[in-house]
Length: 103
Length: 163
Image 1 (tube, chains in turn yellow, cyan):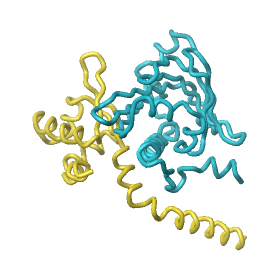
Image 2 (cartoon, helix red, strand yellow):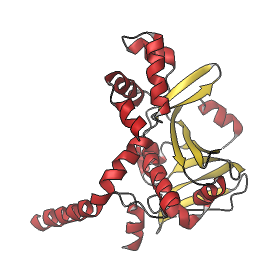
Image 3 (cartoon, helix red, strand yellow):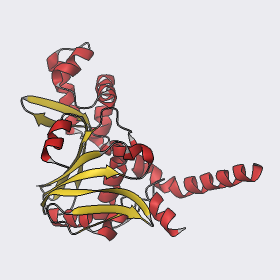
């Protein structure tokens, strides 16, 4: 989980994730065009994102496609949110009840 | 769906989900294919099939149909390729058949599970593939701790079935 936070702590890496969120499965060349950075710089950031599990790659012919893997972020969310889920759900159903009463 | 049809739709939208789970490939395969285990981390939805190559599968809960399709490749405990037709709403039904590939690779004392959902229509409703992170983190929790995830929505269909 340290690697996830380290990877997310950098604005360039967050913009790479934004790019993949916008359009999944891009090549290094495509990503490089969208960032004011050298090919080497983009590669370095992608490597860190891959090591953190936030980006996975698939080969298609000669191309290597990069995909946003949202699963580690889900794990971060669940680690701290699951504890509150019961009261969250209870709160929502109480809200639903109140709204329905008003109608 | 014929082989040609798959070729025609190849190159459409695709999503990839990766997770590491401390378990064996055999346990992981069981959790993916056993109806009761499946329902514990998959929004309360179980899946029924005899898991032979070319067999059909259906998933649903308490009369609610969720998805159906064919097991295109079945290689326990390493690889499962399924066609996927979503059935939970008119909108997702319109997306037609996509494909889900489960790949299990042992890594040290754990497994790397890669779920690739591809052959989706361009601009597909994100409901079609948006549930995977929640399903996979629930699967990890179940196999590593034996417990159910109770985050909001994670068991919504089991609640529907029970009341």
